[in-house]
Image (cartoon, rainbow, N blue to C red; front, side, top):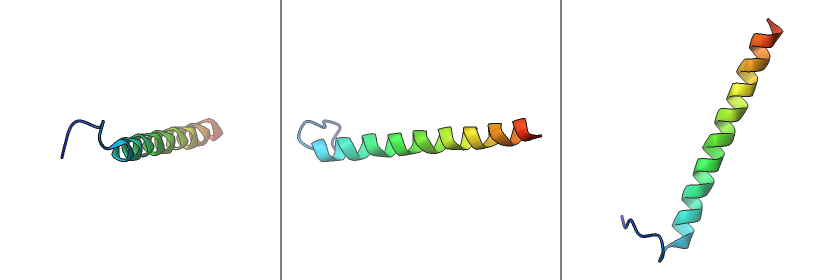
Length: 40
């Protein structure tokens, strides 16, 4: 794979999108666990 993303902007946005989705998943998981803890 090429490290330079100047020629492949699509791959860059796919990577960014994946990071954002992972971040949202982690945040939603943290919120779910916090709600469970506060409920107890």
